[in-house]
Structure formats: structure tokens, C-alpha cells
Length: 457
Image 1 (tube, rainbow, N blue to C red):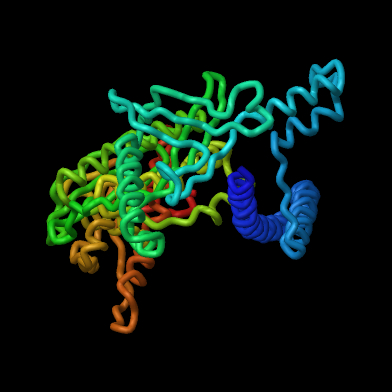
Image 2: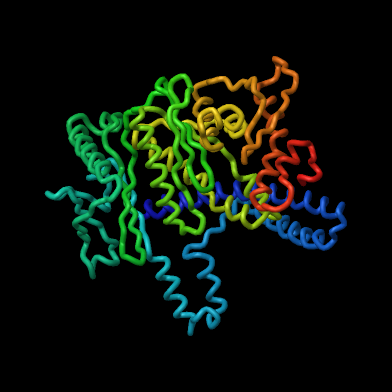
């Protein structure tokens, strides 16, 4: 029981240490951005903004100094039961408490909503304190060893019958079969020979109480799943967006085969609702790739810099980027792909949208995001993305923009030229976006095409 508490606490401490590194990087980025904003506001004579930004900058620097001090001395700040509930004891009346004893009751209740039982493959059914057995109907019966302080009132063991896991029940049964084989092998060949094999698995259990009652979660090593996809058949590219997944399939030569979009709107949803929406969308794409026998290709992104620069942006853009659960979507792709035997690759998405817009959007009648997904799939296959001879790109509303390509040099990568093209298309795309908001007046896209950049601005 002590080992279960220790392992659970070690996991929480390791999580806080990793979070400190991410928070340190985010604070440094936000401080650098605040300094740039103060400098820009001072040049424009906006002294009111300078004053407010300096206050914000001082707050960020104070938080950074405190965090660096914690990291230097190895201090971990961890509050069981939430800081919010802990602070309520200092303002009892304002939070609806008649006495400190009433708050203490809620505090103890918050500490009693879960416990962890550590597993070991050397024990019966992979766990010493919670032994599982298979019933005739395929469900599990758990025999939970209670602490000595509860044995006088509830007995030494608590038996829980009719357990069936909604996800991974077959894996639990397979792990139990492996543990039974391990016990037989250890009885015949000894402990040293048995531990050298791959037989046996530790099964750990976590009991969690919520508004509906108690739930039990089982943790074990995933069994090896045979890979059913092959890159020689082609690839399925996936472009991750804030409101949908753009999917495009290619053959082994990188040619277009099929494209579709999967809705993925998580804004305004709770954490569980967002996870359910992401899981359903990812399951749709992984199932499609499994049927096609082709690996999935997703973009390798880092939103730390973007999320650190949310201050000063529009509320709509900030909400969109904050609700974009890229890390959860990526993790869901990797985990579900592993369980389904579908390979998931991550590639650099540099200029994928620009390449897709210029080369494939009109050719195959795709959206810009589906065209970007096609570029990701082709990038995994090693296809070349040379500049096309027809140097015209669509920017929407039937408008095309011609672009020039710098003099080519063999020492430069092809992405250098795509970067130059992206810089030429950016003003026209921004003008096209403004046109969607402003229907009256001259067409800003046409103004950019004619070179009237001042009028388009």
C-alpha cells in the first residue's frame, strides 16, 4: 500500500517538474513579446499602453523569478484537493461555511475520492492487493484487500463483481492469461528463468469516485499489435485545423486518390466533451487509413510560441487558438494508431499550405486544407515539390495572383523559393480575408493585384 502511494506521488512530482519547464519557456516568450510591445507603443506615442504593458511586464518577471527560484532549489508546489478549496478556509463566510469544521469536512472529502493499487507481475493475476478473476459470463470479479484499520468493520477483503471495461476489456483478459502462463513457467523453471521471459504483466488499478459513483481503471502494458499499413501503398495526409480535420489520400507515387473533411469543433465544450469529439474524429480517420492499408501523416507543430503571443491579439483568434487541442489530437492519433496497427508519421509542415494552394488546389478541386494534407502525404513519400511553370495562385473569389521566383541556386533548398512565394501571396490573402468582413467599397483583392497596396490596407 505504501508503494502504491509512493509511485502515485512520484508521478505527480515528475509531472510538475515537466510542467515547470514548459511554464518557464512560456514566460520567457511572453516577456520578450511584452518588451517588444512596450517598445512599439513608445515609438507610436501611446503612453497609456506603455504604462499598462509595463505593469504586465513586471508581473511576468516576478512570476519568472519565483519559478526560477523553485527550479533552482528543487521546490515542488503541489496541493491535494485544489488550491481553490484550500483558500476558502481563510474566507469561510464568503464561501458559505458556518465554521472551519464544516470546511474541513469538505477538504477531507476531496482527499477521499480516489486511491491507487500498484500491480506486480510476480503476484497472482498481476496484483497483490486487487486480485481479478474471470466469471462465467466474461466479467471480472475483483477481490480488494482493505487496510487493517477497515478490516474490523468491513472485513479483510471487499469483493466487487460484474466488472466490464468499456474499452480494453480484451487486453485485460489477455494480460491475465499471460500472468497465468508466467506462474506455470515460474513453477517449472524457477524465478530467474521466468523473469527473463516476456510472460506476465503488472496490472495496476485506480479507483475514482465522481458524481455517478465509483469507477475502476486498469493499467497495463499494451500488447504488440501487428502493423497493417505499408508506405509502399501510399499515404493518408491529415491537416489539423481548429474546426476540422482535412484528409487526403495518395497512391504510392504521391498522386491524388481521395479527400474529405471531418468536423472537429471543440470551442465551447467541456474537457470530456472535447475529448469525445476528438476521439470520434480520429477514429474515423484511423479506420479509413486501416481499410486503405496506408500510414497516416500529420504535421509536427509547436504551439508554445503562438499561445505565448495571445496577449494583444483579437479575442476571436485567442479563443480559437486556445480551444485548438492540437496536443490531444496528436496523442489520440498516436495511441489509436498503435492499437489499430496503423503507422502515424509526423513531418515538417513548412509551406504545406502555400504548396497545396499553388500546385494542387485547383488541379484536383480541393480546399486549401485538403491540398495541404496532400502535400504532407507526398512529403512522407519523398515526392519533389518543384515550382510549377504556371506561376499563378488562387486567393479566393475567382481572383488569381501571379508571383515571381528568385534566381535559382543549387546550394539553396527548394523551401527557400517557396518562402519567397509565401511572402508575395500573404498581402493578397490578407486582403481577401478583409473582403469577407467588408462587402462595401472597392475590392481590396483587386487593389493588391493592381499593385495598389495603400488602398488595400
